[in-house]
Length: 233
Length: 233
DNA sequence: TCAAAAGTGTTTAGGTTACACCCATGC
DNA sequence: GCATGGGTGTAACCTAAACACTTTTGA
Image (cartoon, rainbow over all chains, first blue to last red):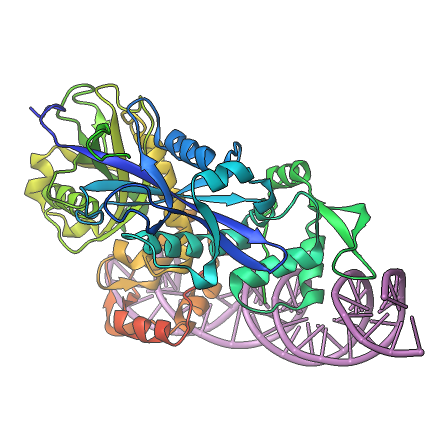
């Protein structure tokens, strides 16, 4: 009979791919850190850490995300587990990657700087350690799928946003320009956005109406068989 | 400075959700085993095992699949990693689930029986140990997505199959009946099926033409920007 | 000849795409 | 009054959906 005790135990880590969106320069960014341990100390890395005995994988991911950003209740989702033997030259480590979507403004500035974390544009990332770039690629591919089919884009925008900002976000993710009229028609026809009676006046003289994503309405629609779908042309 | 050595090591396992399709009774099945170790010995379980020091996660999954079925080169894909603290009452085990799609006829009968493995209809599964039912649910949901968008259905059918069998498979997966003419139009218009000049004559007098999935043609089309899409109405 | 399953086209509806001008405002 | 970005509608096209009868053949 097999026994638990006979088997090899492994170091298990989580790594967080932390996505943000900068409404100013219209770019998707990643929160990266300078690694603090050998090997590869000082190199750019995803935020990661080992899984403790008394915490689940999900808890470990939340903890690491929180310690870096100070944020709780962030959109956080398991991505993929990387189990190659030599992926980490320091030791055999099995690592589960998690994707986080955060509103850049929400970050606790002090904590961020304490940990040497920096936002880097996805389009010109520095070289990352180990297989972290692969993790980013997979997470990004997944984000591109999800954002078509689930209202996750709103996790990257401020609570109040304009339709122009929302469209810019989609264009940044797909690296493609989108027809303004068609985009607005589709998103508004879903009835999950609430038009506020206030305008964003910083980027134009006319000003653009603020909207917010109505989670409650969305949940009700979902229960009635509605499927979010924002296929961008 | 952090050190690798300071951190807890964990038992890491893989569990395989092995899907098969029975063209006779038109049902999706799972290959389940009677668990051979405590706790829960004798209970129904997915095929699983611990990850060794000298093998990757993927290799561990292949090994376990091979030891149970005798098959190599099977469609095998990582599904999700289950990392709850108490998911296995015997010890804290982190387990990565893998989905396998196999052609039922291909199984090595002897090996299968040796391990106490049995095909069970998805629609009336026995109670499974631990969180294995959750693993099945997630894998199935993923299969339903994949089969719309990637030609994975053919992994579940024999090398030569009829359009009726292919449609029956989709109906089994979606639990919904599908319009025969629309289904055929869609799949044939992709030009990835090759009509053979032989008929399957067991289930009808008239006989149904055999087809096979042409992987090469599919690859070429993919390279040219083709996307498989078989959305079933 | 009849029962049983395989195979085949057309029409309609709905959704997606393409496309260009007016509006509001601050300077 | 003009430059800048925000906001709006419609026609053409194309894909998806609905739908029923003919063919083949073994018993």
